[in-house]
Image (cartoon, rainbow, N blue to C red; front, side, top):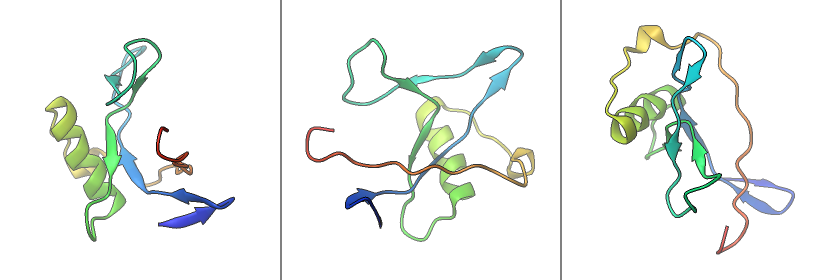
Amino acid sequence: SLQYNEAKVEQSAGVAIVFGDKVLLGHMTKRKWWGGYTIPKGHLDGKETIEQAALRETFEEVGIRIPRKLLPSKYQTCPYVKKGKGH
């Protein structure tokens, strides 16, 4: 993991599934039912690549298998900062 302003930064990966004007969201674990939704995503396991983790997490969380060829050749990243024990 990396350091970002003295906080632990963990890598995670996911896929935004868009159909027309709709985006598939799932409920985040350990969050209240309102305001706790996000795209299917999760942490990288071992030496997984970002692409491998994104495909695995999408299948694990919503049961959709996405062929690797459908992933874009470029993708965006942003830091995920874990805010202590009660984040």
